[in-house]
Image 1 (cartoon, rainbow, N blue to C red):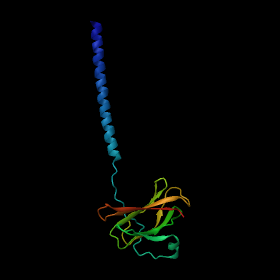
Image 2 (cartoon, rainbow, N blue to C red):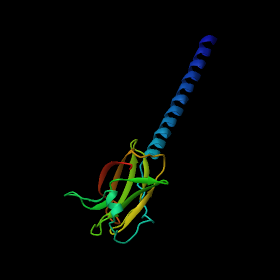
Image 3 (cartoon, rainbow, N blue to C red):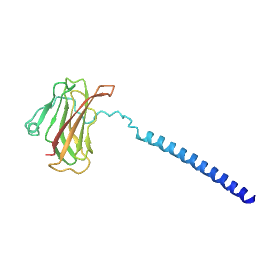
Image 4 (tube, helix red, strand yellow):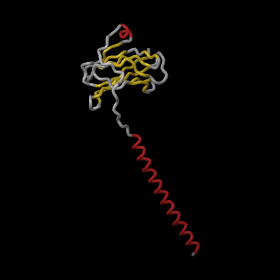
Amino acid sequence: MNNTKNIDNIQKRLIKSLIIIAIVSFITMIFSVLGYVKSSKNEFIKPEFDNKAIAKELEITDELKELGYNEFYQEGMSYKFSMCGKVNIENKKATVYFTNDTNNETWLKLRIIDRNNNIIGETGIVRPGEYVENVDIKGNTKSGDKITLKIMGYVPEKYTSAGAVSVNTIIN
């Protein structure tokens, strides 16, 4: 009888222990999932206006023509922009002359992306009629490296997308 009582007590303690372990595991799993959901939210952060933007018409020089300065627009796009197709990088600055057309109703932003999809430089928001001459570059780049110039349009005040355009080029 004593042996049976001992076995019953051991079984009861074992069952209680297993229930406690299951409850603790379940609670841990819930907190892990909630933590993952909270940390994986991609919260939109409004980009700031570019403090280096120049609010005047850009004079098209021979130097700009040599750098492939060109207007980009296709039917159906909600905005026009101009920039250098040949990007020179010196002293961690990319010469782009990124220009938001005066007649646009869209704010624009430029990102420079390397071949590994890393953002190596970007402007702030550029208003219609403004341009940005240079973009600060992070990381190591050299002549011949492939890059993508990604232009993102924003509806003013709402910060909703007005479309995006990507231009593939190389560092001059």
